Length: 199
Image 1 (cartoon, rainbow, N blue to C red):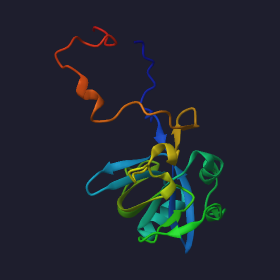
Image 2 (image 1 turned 135 degrees about the horizontal axis):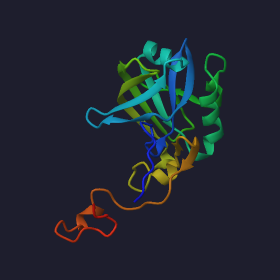
Image 3 (image 1 turned 60 degrees about the horizontal axis):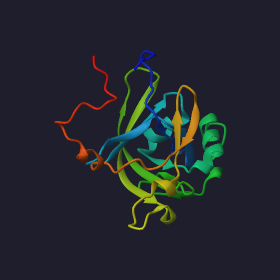
Image 4 (image 1 turned 120 degrees about the vertical axis):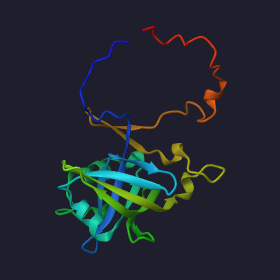
């Protein structure tokens, strides 16, 4: 298979889209972020990466907590706007019904999933960004976004995804297979799959 090289680029596909919530000077502030992910399962931790110039960074450091709110696909216009304008000039809390979690972090109630985090550490590798590591304290999921067993249902949550460098939002597709299950059918002694090229 022919490959084209792009150098050291952040081409992890796709990226989840979240709206980061924090309190700044007594007011809820929200900012769109795509550089985020789970850092570990036990103790559950989440990390987000924000450019140092962002207003949100100050709020996270001062409040020592933040929320990661997962928006639905139909919220794309507001979500994009929250990533374009700064909370220094615009009160973005007016786009959401703001609730406060047990940590004090503001939650965007319209988002089907809200993850409350307590700030654990701020990592600065002397670049243009800061990495915020948060311990997940509580997860709130809208009742209408659960499946029949009471678990979060990705299809009902209908989250946004993001890709670079084309800078586009995407939605989730169909279920492909069950994890930790579909691979059990592979015979390790069988012939190499046809899609593997001989080197």
